[in-house]
Amino acid sequence: MANLLIVEDEKNMQEIIVEYMRRGGHVCFTADDGIDALVALKNNPMDLMILDIMMPNLDGFTVCKMAREMSNLPIIILTARGSEYDKLKGYNLGADDYMTKPFSPKVLLAKANALLRRSSVLLADAINAGKISLVPASHRVFADGQEIALTHKEYELLYFFMANSGQIFSRDQLLNRIWGYDFAGTTRTVDTHIKTLRQKLGDEGRHIVTLIRSGYKFEVTD
Image 1 (tube, rainbow, N blue to C red):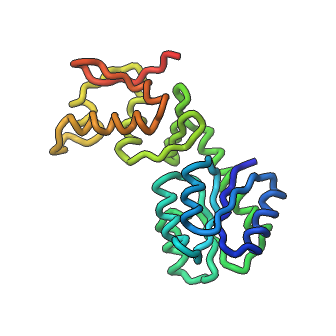
Image 2 (cartoon, rainbow, N blue to C red):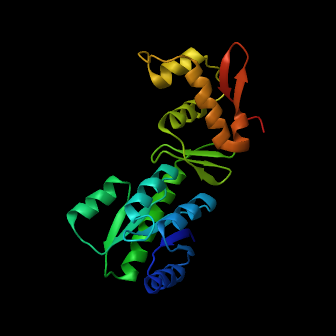
Image 3 (cartoon, rainbow, N blue to C red):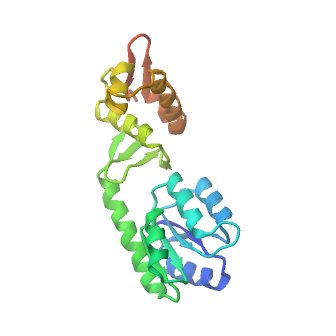
């Protein structure tokens, strides 16, 4: 069973998709436009999104781009236009698969299940510490069961900490490891990124420990 977000402004089509997804054992959330879709993504843990392209307020391409910045959940786009341009644009914005209308709901369910299985395999290879799970294969990060969106540098910092748990690193060492020796910034960059990373991790951010005059370490003590 998975949580699916169905983003479709045509009610009849939305109801058909929901019916087949529920037959497949999934829980369905619905959104009638792009703005509602982004709100639903922000407020609910979703495992996959089925996203129509032609919608009011925000089109599916815009939603796909913004959703990918928030999460790495699988996205299937639905389009009434089967042009190569639309398909390539969807993939370039982060979509995982597409279907051209009219389509078979059974095939859509099969595609959704295939993407969910692939996600499950990736999650099985996660690095776990406390209530944090990091999936190197997909760069997905979960804290206390909720997926969180990290920037590239925040992800690299967390991965480095978790892979070297218990070790102390100075700000200069972190700056060189994550940003590179030719980085022109200062060690304050490290402090800023760690502050933001802690905030995004919530209670789990406590595992990133500050050591006065020494630097930082990642430690799980409970």
